[in-house]
Image (cartoon, rainbow over all chains, first blue to last red; front, top):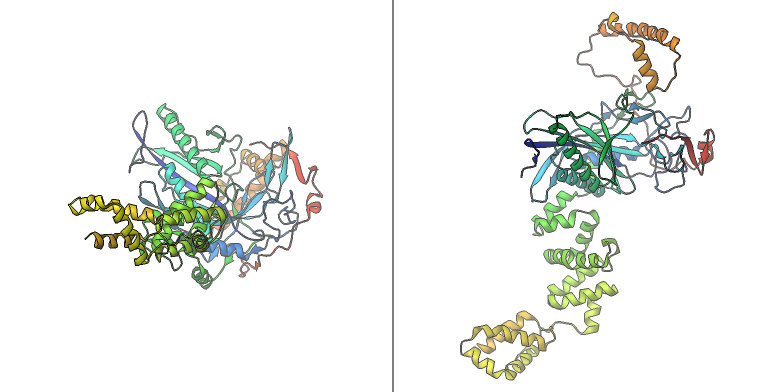
Length: 483
Length: 100
């Protein structure tokens, strides 16, 4: 598939690199014992370390280190047993230290790669350059007062993982798929909750355009995008802007831009000419971070199954289509629901019932899987009753609708409504005898060679049984009786 | 780089001062540039040492970073945090508007 963009003067290739900031799931902050919980009163979750009071010293949180290692393993990346924390210096009202503790030259995680899946069914491997640990800054609010900004340091010092991709992305679609994949991986790992609305994940995108095969063009960086939709919209806008500017004889300025969520446009940030002069140097308050390979091995051994592995298992062992497997593994909760429902059941049948009936009903009711009135065990129970012939697939749909409405077990509904499939040869034969007796003329026509009437007899028998006769047995018995 | 090339001019001094948000009186810039140049040329002597293949050193103690458990042991000291704030409102620090 070609990702080239047609301009007025020819084709352009888009080159995108992404920096994803993911908040580490931990109880307390990276260098202080203050809580990380979202939604507290302003400056409530702040220690004197986070407020950068003189004399306070940072002490690193062991769990944050482990979470970064787990994430690195999930990104198939090299884990560096020796890494160093640096000070990234800049001046801003919500950064009380005057520097962010980050990792510059020696990050905790090195090169890796993940595979993204595109709409047309193809897959692309995207390189990961590095992952490093750093502190988040506080939050500034500018709309509370005409001439003042309000500062809340609750986020100050919360651990972030910055995951930097290689410039391997070639379209907005790929960038969106990459973000979704990274989010899916960290959520499976439990290293970040992936909640983009609350700011637990956000991305900066570096975009440039070039003539196919030529040198890289000048890039711009659009910061702080907090949804997949905004990432894609910002890239689309930036690509168009850059192509038009170059085709009109202009030049791209390397700059930081902001995305306006209302207009879908990007604009240059003002007054940041020194913004990239961070004067990094090793933080004298922190020794190098060192751990043994055995810690890495231990964490690797405890790692949960990742979406790609589960998908492979679903296709290979369960025989699901790769489409069904992709749908069922996109969210960690969906895969867990499926696994629980499909335990000891017909895997394909459960996948079908989940992706067609359950998702259909949830969609219609505007509910998420977490609010499903039908539990995994109940869905499995329904499928078990189809598999063992207690009810037909058609009756099962009615039973399912009832389950979704009332939250009751399939077996109870079948019992109460008397929906049990009739698999008793004598009972079915009696039904067939009656159908044949009532339609003697059609029987004669059938025997005279009108084979198509067979379906009519099946339909009449099923109707007479109120849909409860076992269709396979009806078929067999009809054949022998009409034979 | 030899010592006589390590030149910090007043423009560089102004830039460093701006980045550090330090206001310098005009007549202080030239003397500070000279001070910095003297310091830099003294440090330049280190360049005589052959450091090919030597990794930069982040610490000389030989210790590695102590780790703490992931437990909530701090915070909930809003009063102390805001005690030195020039201005506060509803628990926030209040500062001159920084737009963007």
